[in-house]
Amino acid sequence: MNKVSKILSSIKEQPITDPVVLERFDSFQEYIAEENQKINITSITDPVGVATKHFADSLSLLRLDVFKKEGQRVADIGCGGGFPGLPIGLVRPDLRLVMIDSTEKKIRYVERTAKEYGIEKIKCIAGRAEELSAPDAEYREKFDIVTSRAVARLSVLSEICLPFTAVGGYFVAMKAAGADEELEEAKRGIGILGGKVVDVVEVPFTFDCDKSDFTADESAELDEFSSSRRVLIVVKKVRPTPATYPRVWAKITKKPL
Ligand code: SAM
Image (cartoon, rainbow, N blue to C red; front, side):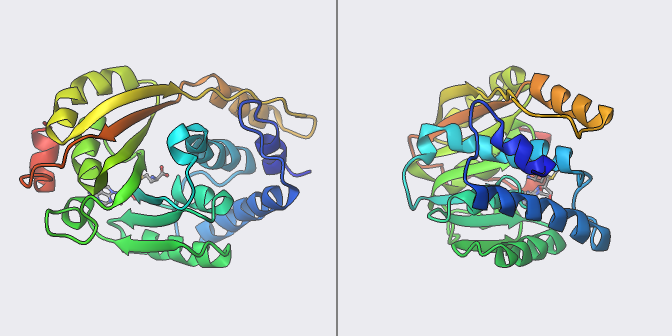
């Protein structure tokens, strides 16, 4: 078994057991490493780093009840090299994904990768989130779930993600150690944008993994990932977002709500 499958199959809280799916993730890691030599997309390409920080972390979203329903419309805002959206698409072909990033090069790579891995229900859009979710835009309040990782602090992220979220749907922010402080600072703005924080879910990772062929560095990398905090902040869209939001990016970042 290769290192990626070993790691993904050994997550106590959420093991992946299907050998076909595990093989696809093994192949996907190799693909990322190869493609990254041609176009620089991510700083993480090694098997243990990709399996933990990219694959396991992305898939942790599927622990949430809000993901259980089939066929939902899911947006990944600021998807970069395709995280969390691509791993989600690999294991949940029923979901209708829209990947959004302001960098054309990254979004074309995500599109090619989705094709390579047979992810069919996916649209990849190059553009700025705050423009694509403007009041008269096609994607305004159209998604059952909007998610985002490593794009901005929650106070900023909420203003570019909640306008995409349909009333009754959810915005899920993937956060790490500073989650509590970010949440405190963003709460008021979330309310203004029509959201309500309904859950803050800790996502622990316990690996019950045979590390006999891991180097000391790889073993340490796995332990470090396992001991770092990861949190999913779940915001329900309870009211439409006022037409004055989102503002232009300079205002969003200089004066978060
Ligand atoms: N979500 C990916 C991940 O976790 O690996 C990528 C994170 S990367 C640090 C942040 C990405 O957000 C970049 O690819 C950038 O182009 C994109 N981004 C930043 N602001 C954006 C905006 N206003 N609209 C769309 N994309 C944005």
